[in-house]
Length: 166
Image (cartoon, rainbow, N blue to C red):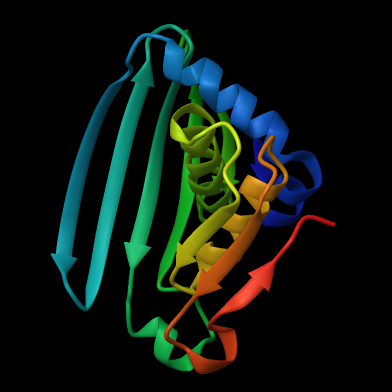
């Protein structure tokens, strides 16, 4: 069984690769998914189970502690994913779920824009300057999109930054 940490995820994934993989995955038959949530607004434990019959079984274990943002020491949301072989149940990997979620969320956004946006958009507006904002911008700018991006946030030092493709 492998442990795949955030550094390995960042060294292997690219947004064009992930956008293409997600596009192919969205065209496959739906998989079986079940969610469970425990806790309250101060601390939640969320589990998402998924079965891709005959291929994979996985569980994503997620915690949400919004007060973590006050100190800046830890993210509000943290996760791990556990992946099993769907044909024999053998554990395959434990994956840094926080990092993989950042990548998947940003790539799904870029895929949505690829499918739904006009052919030649000029500007991408991202409202919010939290952890996902720069990842969203990078996903869009590293995909097939050709536009400048504006980031608007309520935190003064991170608000209203302008991004362009290098």
